[in-house]
Image (cartoon, rainbow, N blue to C red; front, side, top):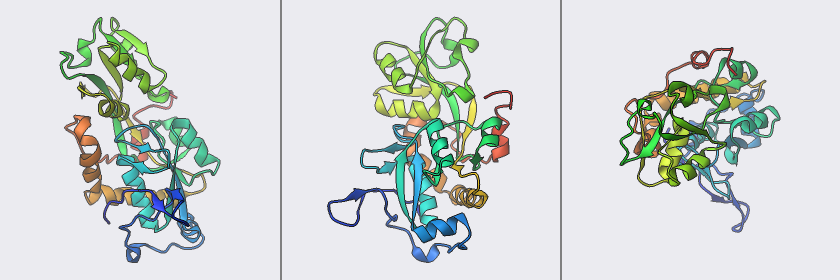
Length: 290
C-alpha cells in the first residue's frame, strides 16, 4: 500500500475547505471490510476518523490553520486512514492534551508527543512505538561543540518532557543550563547567543528546520518511545494499529517516510524502524518515574 499524504480537499461545495478527505491514492479493493461490532467496523460505517497530531513540530508533524497535516507522523496516520478506507480529520493536540482527547472520546486515536513509561502504559491504551527519540544537542554548524562533554561553562537551553527528563545539569554540573517552558523558547535563546539547545530529537529536528546554520550533534543521552493512543475499550483498534505499523516498517515505507521528512535534519546513523514492543519501550523508564 503506497504512502498517503493528507491534503486539503474540496468537499460539499467549492467554497468549503476541510481536512476530512479520502487519500486520493487509496485502492478501495484493498480495504478490509471489518465486522460491524468492531471499532474499525464502526468507523467504516461512519465513514470518517478523527486523529490528533502534535502541531508545530516541523518535519515530524505539522498542522496548518485549515487542518491540513504533513510530516512523518502524518504519513503514518494516513496509512491507517487508507487501511480503513474512510475520510480523515486532523486536529492539533500535543502531549497530555492529546491523551485526554482520546479518553474523552473527542478523537478516535492520537499521536501524543509523550514518551512511553510504565506508568503511561498502565494508564492509557497505547500501540507499540512508531518512533524512538533521543535527547541530543543542537548547535551552530560553526560551533566546536561536539558532545555533552564539551558543555562545561557553556550556556545551554534545555527543553524536556517531564515524564522522561534527563537533566544536563546532572551530567555536566558546571554547564550554565536554562530550562525552557517550550522548545520555541530555545529557538529564541539560540538566536540571542545561547551556545546550544538540548531536547528530545523530535523538537531539535523542528528547530533545525526553523533555524538556518544549526545542526544536531552528540551522543544519544536518553531513549524514549512514542506510541499511538487509543480509547480504553478499543483493544481491537490497537491490534489494527500495530498491524498497520508492522506492515509500514516491514515493507520499507517507514524508512521512505524517514528519508523524505527527517533524514535531512536528523543527523542519525541508526535510521531503522523501532522494533520494540510496548512493554519493552515502557521498561526504558521504570515505574518509579512519572
